[in-house]
View 1 (cartoon, rainbow, N blue to C red):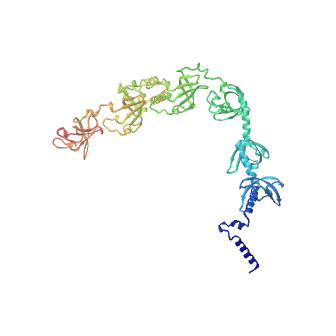
View 2: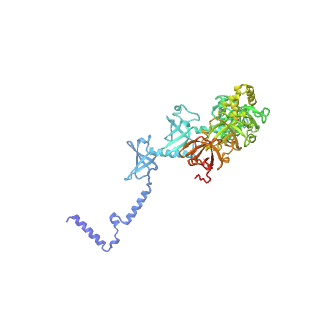
View 3: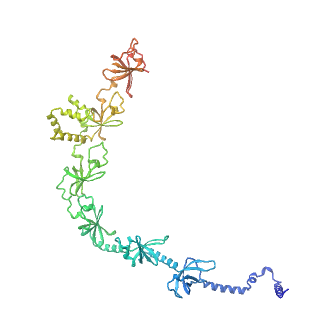
Length: 620
């Protein structure tokens, strides 16, 4: 055994001997491990507390004040209150000196307790805080114009590059951006994008505020009705902007330029023209001035009472056409409204649009219904120049009266016709109106003596020329007859036939004689009939009546019989064609037939010769 081993064994024996009376549970293992007594441990804790109090707590991405304590080669050692100093590159500082106080940001704390710090990032973060504060408080800032870029300028604000748009440099468009490069300007921050770290500034906003203050002072001195001399600055479709001085632009609306209706202000004004205007209204809140030009001229409505009266017929020009009517200028600067309901007496046409009757530029005659000079309003009428066709319509178109009408068009339910009210037939000469075209009617009418023809046309239109008479008569006929709508339903064409398509009966332009069945004053429709001109066949020819006819055609089911008087072709079953002695009837021989069956709805009936001598007979 070596000497060292002997010494250790002696020490253990001494320790065991000393602690032989001490229990194991009361043994102080920490004192044994540290090699310090309790008094020594308490003293050590006091010293550690004093040391930790002198060191501040450090957090990442926080800015701290640091002191330059050393400059070694290309590095600068910074003491910012942590247990270990930080080091930054010499390139981040400009001419650093020992004991200088600078701001740094802690980027990272590594596992060894060392700090990675930065001066530039601290400076940028501090600048962002200042920019945010200036933006919130809406304070005026000063920035340096560094360079030009697409659409504006690059400016430096608190060491951060910002954007100054070209539209925010001055109140007027700027063409030369290079003029501002290298200059210091004032402005305000108008927009910040924290995600993209973009800042937009404006210099124009300060100029506008200055101009607004100046405008308010000048506008406070203006009064309504004051006459000013201004320069036409700009012309738009709704009016003209007038420069009245002091940076104030007044608006002269298109309706205040002239008493006459104009399509565009350029008809009366030119850019750069100097002219007097009167102030119509002032909005001191919005700093707006409304001007008028026509108010300096005499109002044509004031001298209107001497020129017009109610019921007077005047000639005017259509200036505006709307859905509800048309405006007609009867004197320069004086317009009246012809409402769409005053354009035609027609009740059959759907008067939805006034464009159907007039168009802009038309010169028309109108009747003055009423007017109000104070409100500068006038109501005109176009239809009252002609007599109201509905005034005595019940007298002209009495139920049962007969008229001549012309086939106009065909519909699924019947025929539309057009005509002029004609007198009832009184002579046989009026049967010439039954011709199938109007041209034939005129040719027949011309065949009469020339003096009678001219006298008739002169009575209607009072014209001299024969050609003028014909054309005017046609135009008058069309214009007057468009007010009435004549209808002939399929059911009123024939007593005998089922008419499903009237185009097989008539042709367009045919002149036909019809009887009035009904008149609807609300819709303006006249219901006419053709079959009512003759007796009802079905009332005259009932079952059991006997008529004379002859067989014109045989076929396997029976024969076709033609009645002598009625000019009708009727069916007779084969077993109804036997004579008394059992022999069949011969063709084209007049024989008596009895009606044995008819159906009013489908207008069908059967006849029989055999039923004349057989009493008990059943068609079924």
